[in-house]
Length: 270
Length: 270
Image 1: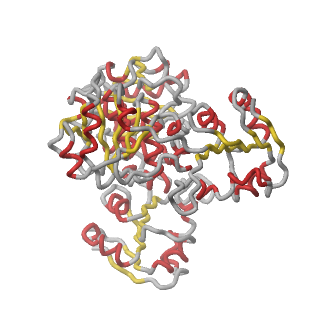
Image 2: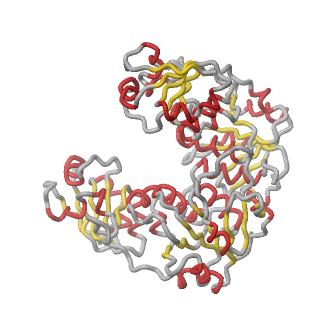
Image 3: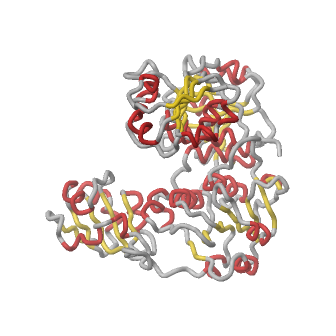
């Protein structure tokens, strides 16, 4: 059972985790980075409490902590209760969601472990926008994708903005970095029995609807909006699929294209 | 051929259309609304110039106007050239896209005219978020949907934020308000020979992938994220379809769900 501890002084050192939120989520190997995982709002805090990330504490207005009472019953962490002004003074800006939680990062998941037994995964190259990455995780969660593999030049899914835009689903959908030489590192997928399907607007690619991915074990390889996948990544895929687009239209947003492809793979059994 | 006119004084009355951009896009029937259509950035300005909206003028830094020289060659409008500081002083905030264009609204399109001959359309109820609406138009354009019908409580697609998020596709994809009693007004679709398919997370709905929409003339009925479609709208549809979702996950963003459905309808012939 979490302990509710009223805090009236914004300078209280027990709130130190909540200062400089704009840098606290940086990875520990980056300047100022403490590698903290920050959840904002009742829905996302709830997902953090249910996640494997070790929660350090919560900070919220009493009304929001009350909403979380059921989620906090099995958790032994301090929950600091403060009014909105004290919270704003501690954090440095006004928060409109009324509750925050802070956790440590969990031990990294090994890519080989993640893909073993997975029905479908997403593999990302150069998806370096935190909002797109967060949206992609939200879509992966909704559409039943088992995990996300991060290739080169991807953003950090545990940045505050990614966590928020994902609605906390980065805390639920397992992810792992694909280390080693790229794109040779894709072999871990093939060794696990997954077909690597690259999503590309290339006219020569197979239309998604007729690629026959539904019901198969598939790794969907996705690049950033704009540049798309590199030639090396495309060459390393087992097949290339495309979403048919109207003439003269830019590509879809990467998270949106991913959702269309996730649905086509049909990971959620209807 | 557009005339390039250098402007050095931010108070120059020829720039009056560019003041108070945050209210200028309001519909003329709203407080302070002038009903102007505002395009920001080279890509969106280009789409405005190619649209049926009567362009009043452009305002940009010389480099951006140069990029648009080809698009401006057949257009007889003033293009005011200013430096970034003059632009910022006139507009009231700093713009990072370097070029704006302003147009008047075009005459409304009649819903009956829009749906005649359409292969697929989207019909919206209560989609009142400008960003979601803009994203939805972008997805409709990319995936070849012929038009968008606005039912009750929808946002205005011509607000600046919608125009920007749509990447200018609200200026390309025809839209019309569905006037008259809702949802009886959906009859205009049936009279035009379109099947009305409501997208809903209801477990009793038919999974999208097996609903057999591909290749048919379809009107996709979409509600806002969160509340979804009203019971009245659901009851008025010819069939109900759902995107299978993983347990315990909130709905997809409405524009993302729309993209998945647009792809399933298969409006773009691959």
